[in-house]
Length: 364
Image (cartoon, rainbow, N blue to C red):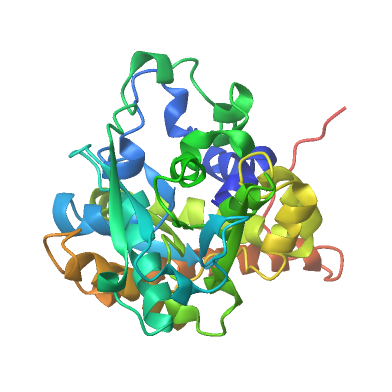
């Protein structure tokens, strides 16, 4: 995901914030006892998650109460794709054609890949005065059961991009499973839920996009597991708010740095995104505000995603996004960041320094 957290994996500023309060901070997969499921079902009280939208919606709706701390909107949308040499040039040309749709058989976690595809397909059809009845949906069930397999749990990892040390993820068809079905002629079209994945497909020379949601001015129709959101358990928020504030302080600092240094942030993010390369990653993030927020637009995008999930049976219980959101943590973090910055900047400008009451120990 494009997020301040995934930039910080190389900067280490979040770890520094926790060291200030005497707390060890690490990526959840650094411990061999943890499998991959916490990222999807949030079953660790001491986990702060920054990632795609649909898993945390399902967690808060149906599994356990969490707190929404912040969000980052990314301009990705999604693309409808066909074989490059097919005489299909418009979405209307898909009438009567087959469109692929994945289906996870894992009942522990939600099927976030399918939700994106389902929502994107419906939106694109709707924009062209079509419905699901105008096409044939072909489902592709798969096991989706790797999250606790021993071979996937070694070696322990210090940051997310280490997963790709053993895999060429930009050319790994595990992340573009329907592409082979399209090329084999099993289906006539597929929806790639991230524009960046679609561009990897196009780079093969065998696939083209006939519609791109990210090129529309209407942001409400571009929700596709985005915005990326920050969540923690209600247990952490109630019993250890200082842990939440420390994390949000780091996200503000890293996000501001990334906004000022987009090219450098792109080099870091390129290690784990599905953009073609660092330059392409830069083009994808140059308009993204990397400082997480709970802006009105972000909250509305989250509502759109949640409502779609509830309407189509991907969550059992509905909830109020405004009640889920807890802006007080971000507000407190922002105040502390500004106070620290004022102290640093004013230190040499005021007779008594910046208000810091410091008793120093001479070194040397």
